Image 1 (cartoon, rainbow, N blue to C red):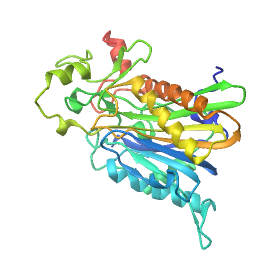
Image 2 (image 1 turned 60 degrees about the vertical axis):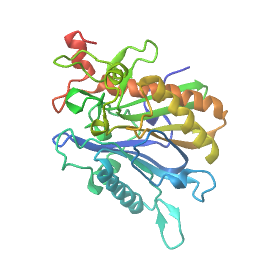
Image 3 (image 1 turned 90 degrees about the vertical axis):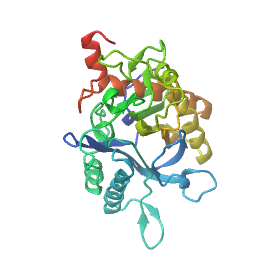
Image 4 (image 1 turned 45 degrees about the horizontal axis):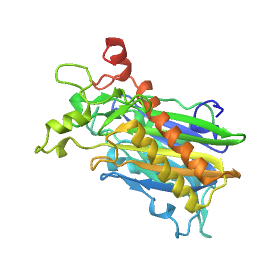
Length: 328
C-alpha cells in the first residue's frame, strides 16, 4: 500500500473547502466533484440529519452528484447547501433538467449548538465561501469547517466531553487506485486507536482529564436516562477514482462504516447519525470489494486524525492537551 499526500484530494477531480467560525464554534466543509461522481450513502445510528440522500440509493433516477456538504449547526446547518448549489449554478454545473441545470448536493449535519454560540450556524453564504476557497491541495484538519465545534464522549454532557474535529486520510492499495476519506467526528462514544483500543479522546472522569471510558460509564448509568446528553454524529465522505456503479458506490459506503466501528466505541448508537457518503469519479477499473475494504481503513484513520489534530476549544480539552498532561 503506497500512501500519497494523505488527503481526500488525492482523488483526481475532488476539491475541498472549509468555512470556519472560530467565535461561534461552527462551520461547514464542501467536497466538490464538479465533473460529476457516482454517489452512494450509508446511514447508521438513530439521530441523522441529512438532505438529498434518497436520490443516492439504487433505483432512483439521478446517477451523479456534484458536491457533498458536511456542516455543523444541527438541522439549521443544512441551509449551507443552498450556497453550494448557488455556486455550482453560477458555474453552469448540475443535472440537466432542460429548463435549468440543477446541482445535486447531498448534505449531512452534526450537532454543535452546545459548544460556542448556539445562535451561530452555517449559512448559505458560508457554503458559497467554502466552495470558492476549495482546492485540490492538502486538506486542513482539526478545528476547521464541519469539525470546528465537534466533540466526543458526550454521555455525561458536553462539560465532560473532549474536543474533536475533522480529519482526512488516503491510501493507494494498488497501482493507480486511490481510496480516501474525510470525516467530521462528533460522536457519543470514545475515539480509540484501532490497533490497541487505547482511548484517544472521549468522556472524562469527574474533576480530572483522565478518560473514563464510555462503555464503563454506561454500565454505571443502568436504569438512568442519558437522552438529554445525546446529540452527536459522525459524518463523512469516502472518495475513489474507481469506476463504480450506483449499487457499488452504496456498497462502498456501507463497508466504510466498518471503519467507524473500529475507531469509535460504541458506534452507531441511537444518539449518533453516522452518515457516510461515497463518491466514485470513475476511470480506474477496480474490484468493489477491494475499494470497500480500504474505504473502512481510511475512514478509521481519518477519525483518528480528526481527534489528534483538534485543539482545545469552548472549555473542552483535546487529545493534544491530554498528551501534554500525561493522561493520554
